[in-house]
Image (tube, rainbow, N blue to C red; front, side, top):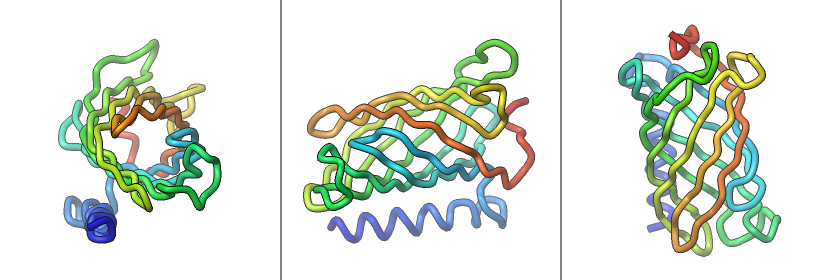
Length: 157
């Protein structure tokens, strides 16, 4: 079951951008920070409208014991991202709601909630995300990301 979930999720990430536009998704980002330990990974986001996006991500995590050989070294997440307001001049803020799966020896599936602020330090590709993953217990999520744009920064309009 764990392997099937992981394989299907990876296929979904790879095909989502290809099938929507005939190319990769609008925004691909490298992310890192704290998510059940130290984490680093990749996220893909696609616009559904000006104020709504769907997103998928995969991350490697050290887990709470800070080793990559822990119980759940792979984190898979997917969900929706809703634009809620702008902070200051042209700093979009989003609310994200989705599913998260911690895969490994102690696989778990739960809900992820987060708040995302774009244009951190007035840099278009940088964003900051803070939130929590709710599985059997809550896990803090604090991450910085760097977007690798594959289309113009239309999300800033």
